[in-house]
Image 1 (spheres, rainbow, N blue to C red):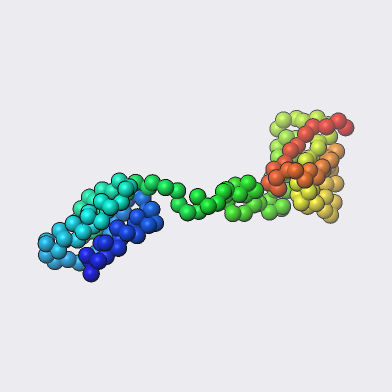
Image 2 (image 1 turned 180 degrees about the vertical axis):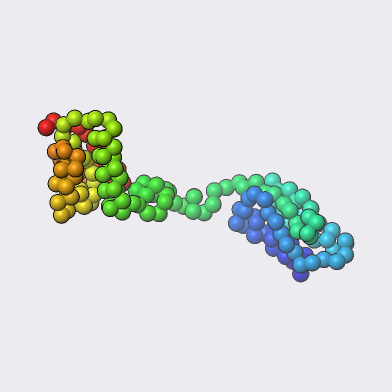
Length: 168
């Protein structure tokens, strides 16, 4: 069984282009000849692979250690590009999360950098909608003691925003 498994393991490693440190746990073998035979089959099969593979032998626990250099990209990397919207994360921040970031930045600018005059906040339309709902803008203007203009900019990424100093 271990001899068949050794041949199949070598095949699967090559097919899946698995790289790095590989540990194989074969069925326990009592005799030294059995261990040598399994290692010989594994070495013979990995020689058919063009990718550099080193079989380091059996550990004290009876596990086979080997290393294999990864040669190619995995299937996902070769078939797909990273999403320009979420940058490969698989999701984007909610509108409420971006609004919180905008509010923090506004408070920081007004409190720390002594920005004078009105402020213009440029955001994605989805974010602008949240900022202008239920008197949020008016409450913020009162808190910061500034006139704030919210500009919806469709070309902006939903997670980015810009705060400009305007004239009062």
